[in-house]
Length: 89
Image 1: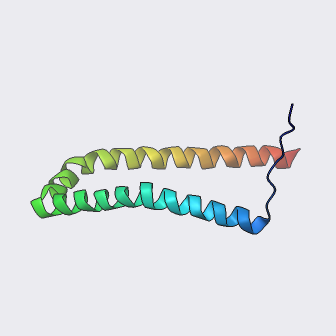
Image 2: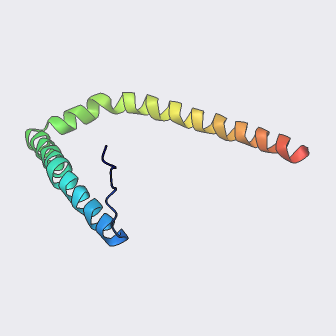
């Protein structure tokens, strides 16, 4: 049986290889999605649908925002209680 040899490289080669992979991901994956999102937003703005969508979903976003603020406040209160218990020991 042949022993497998590992390819060893220096840190610069590893960095350059990672940068190349990251660039490929960015250009092949992210950029087309960003362009598509920009096109959809532009079409919605030009047709006036963005304003209608905003008016329809404003009450829902308000309810979600209110619920998030309640959850945040209760979490802060819980953390304060926990920290008081830790300090008292």
